[in-house]
Image (cartoon, rainbow, N blue to C red; front, side, top):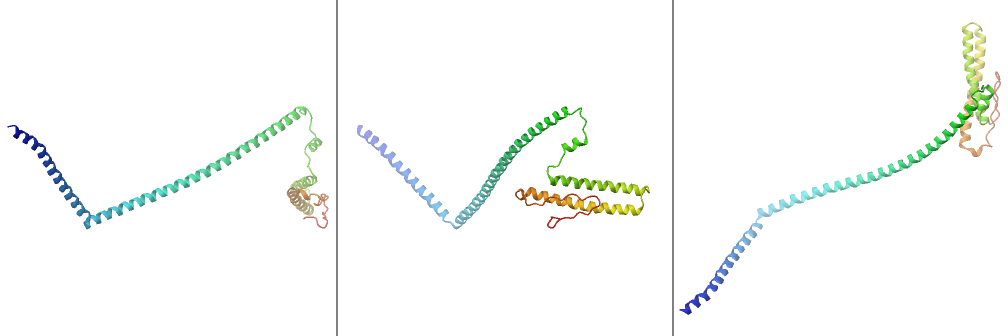
Length: 239
């Protein structure tokens, strides 16, 4: 009775091992079948064509995305360059504005100083009567050209006033037409030369400001002609 029990005890593990081998063999053949099936499926023309189409679509989509990203990158780089350029321009404008503010402050201080001087002068001369001599002494030309320019302008305006007076005299029949025509011709002659000399003086002043090194080589200004006289200019005078 003891021997059969030992045989049964020894046959139990052997059966388990055999059953395990059968399961492994079945799984092996099942895997082999699945591999063969998928291998055959992968080698099928329709499947290969489908894989190729999908690959082409994916490649096209990736190329489109890459092109879009490249364009976006270029736009961002261009915007960054513009921003940097604008930043430089803003810095330059700020620097220019700072320098202008400093200049304005200096001008403001100078104007305040001049204003204080004028107020002081007005307080000192508030009760004093201003005469023509005082006005001429306060307002005078700085050089000979300016003096002659002032004389030309004064003569031009005086001739305009004379025109008005002659028109009134002719309208009131205080002078005849012959006298009126003669005086108008004489005044027009003087006004023409006064205005011509005025233009030459202005041109000469501009040249003098642009070329201060040649002041000694400039011709001296001509005196104003007397009333009724025809002015004469020497040879080489810039008319």
